[in-house]
Length: 229
Image (cartoon, rainbow, N blue to C red; front, side):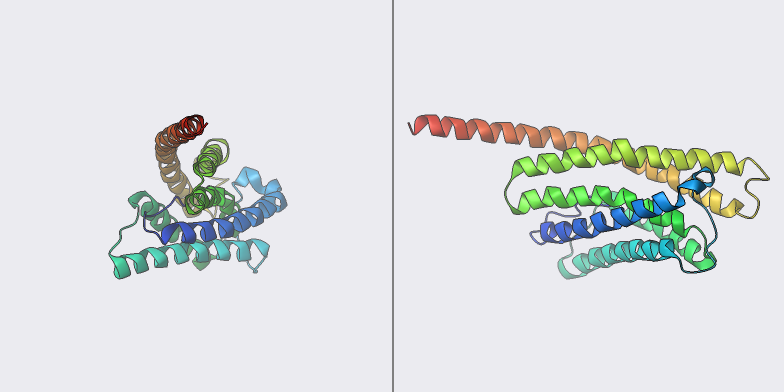
């Protein structure tokens, strides 16, 4: 749910702002995770007859993704600047599942908990803060954080949801009344897993390039200081 989406001068500022919003959403998502932890064996799937805390967090997550899509559309219409295909796939993949959830009032807790994965977008904000302040080291730390979020939290989280939803799907008693919802969850988590593995590979390459740049910059500064003595 969100790496940087362009190289335009206006993009870093937008992504830093988006990162702050994502960090706040992630904190709310962890609050729902603690609240709904007893329901983990059901992959946090439940029906919500009333608008509870999870509903409002889920609504804010959906609103943030819609804002992202509108921003991408505006950039294309205003500057003819395309957006990253992997990010578009990620957002458009989530929207049908969210639409189903709100139409059937089901899965708000799961969507709210999924907001914890927005920590990746928060790390993108750190990376772009490094761009705005011309601090390559900050970009390196942002990428390290993004890598940690992917490997330590997002991929295990999607994998756990996939395993639990598959286990429930093959049990006629367990899936009763929610077969469609668990099928959607299983398919969605597999696709999200594939995207996150792709982002890990991307980040590995970007991190190597960034760390090489920091080392070269430090070496140039050292030589310049030596020559000035």
